[in-house]
Length: 450
Ligand code: ADP
Image (cartoon, rainbow, N blue to C red; front, side):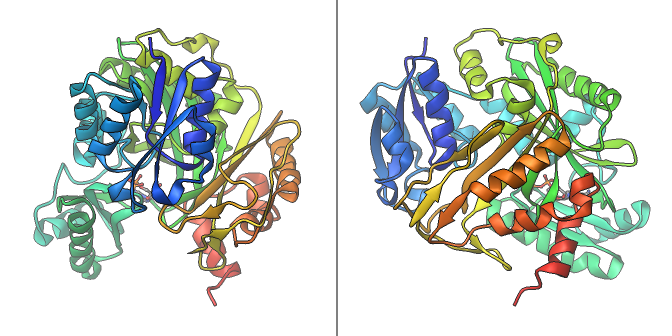
């Protein structure tokens, strides 16, 4: 049994894991950079180890430092959170080679899903519907132009190794193809060291719908419905909800079952998310994330389960604590991402928090590592908190979000809180009528960069 877990992350997600471990009677070890010596995750864990200087590449991404921290503290398992080393197959291999447990999927599954072309092929062969496009990689512009003609413009060129919105370019016509193709390639090369690209039909008004799956690694898997994450800026999610306002119970059951069966067949272990674009009643697979997602709390809220606890259980070889029949949706949940960013152009805004007050009350969850007097370092992601609300239905969740945002105080820096106040006043948000392009258009019309 796991008695001590090292949390290979920082910020709110590190607290999330420490909390689950503590409720299970498991000790936690925080790792931190020199810039994070005063961070909340260091204070909250049972033990902590400094693993290097401020830049992530020398601390949170340093595999030798993290393995050494396990050896020093006697931690038997590592939870990677999201980002950093969470989807690094090489890291998982090294963890296992050291006789430690990685709380997450196998290196092989991470490798397969981390390469988008292989992931798409795999999913297709497992019966999951995919976006129409090139059959695998596209070698040159000539081949790309042929595909453009075949599928019709616009198309999107994507780096097979891409992630976080990087390495994707849209071509609206043959003239744009050449530069879009080369840019996607160059971004793939410079960001991920891999210039292979593929092409997909660019859907006009899809929603981003992702299915939460969970497997026991022994051929059993369930789905926990969908999250609608269509509200995005530069392909980055800012507002997520579950269930999706546009998805019917029949559609959910059908796509959910397809996804659960697919991951069961590959003996997937732990939490995973299968991402789709959804348009005119059809689902199109785009990628699978082999980790806990930032937005997992909305799923936890409506199903009443603790996904991190479940991850730890299956990593210990225990069965999942629920079956598909136990999973029933209760109400509606919404998450908004509070970033240390200055509107209207979302410039990172690190600095000292002079006052922090978290909202509370029925159906309100604030996942954040902030505290009064904390200084947000400039080296990491700008996400500083997630406000999650849960209501009996969508209108109640929206009203609760409005109320909770009114209570939330983050002084000393600029944040994205005013964005959500403004969004809640929009009829389309109130009715749930939005696609992946809605937010960009709204920002152009309402928050022209000064
Ligand atoms: P990343 O790994 O960088 O997050 P994804 O493949 O998940 O990339 O795509 C991110 C977002 O890009 C999607 O949520 C969607 O908004 C947009 N996108 C991706 N593929 C398409 C497509 N074929 N048509 C329209 N939009 C797309």
